[in-house]
Image (cartoon, rainbow, N blue to C red; front, side, top):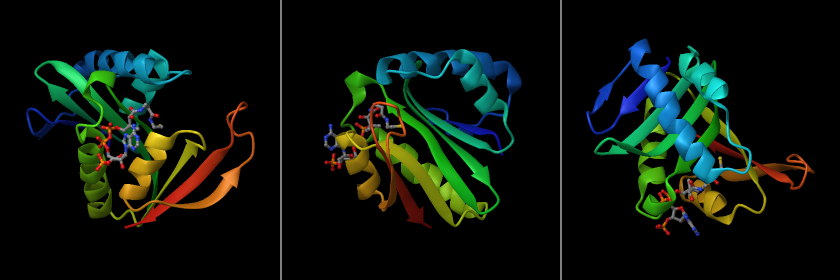
Length: 154
Ligand SMILES: CC(C)(COP(=O)(O)OP(=O)(O)OC[C@H]1O[C@@H](n2cnc3c(N)ncnc32)[C@H](O)[C@@H]1OP(=O)(O)O)[C@@H](O)C(=O)NCCC(=O)NCCS
């Protein structure tokens, strides 16, 4: 798989030379979005994996949102989704999720899982809006917070 949707171009880019720049753009979003952001090595490794589906949206040359899934056979896991703070509540996460889920369905994925901080209201609302249901909780999963495990059947 290892596909990256460059949404302003509307094409899939599998060109390895573009990966470094994309990883750098994702790192910027990560740092703005998470207390414990992925490192450039984490991001580069995900982009390079055959089992990853990463998508991003752009406004001009600025990356405004990104998400990354990992696939194993007919299951996938949403690893990350983040939107630049000044572009939140514009529907970007919804667009990326919809596109990713459609892509995953076409390659035979039948269920998608994710873990989310129990205190992350915006993300939980986003996932519920896109058909995810809570199936279990993991106590103290993040050290300082419980996790909800959510699942969506395709
Ligand atoms: C969670 C996040 C990805 C949402 O991105 P977004 O582009 O703003 O979301 P959308 O505009 O597509 O919103 C879709 C739905 O999500 C929910 N939602 C999003 N932000 C919300 C907020 N601040 N409060 C309540 N609900 C929210 C709403 O149901 C919304 O639908 P609506 O606009 O019709 O009410 C974004 O807030 C973010 O990047 N947060 C930091 C990173 C993070 O926590 N990622 C998730 C864990 S991996």
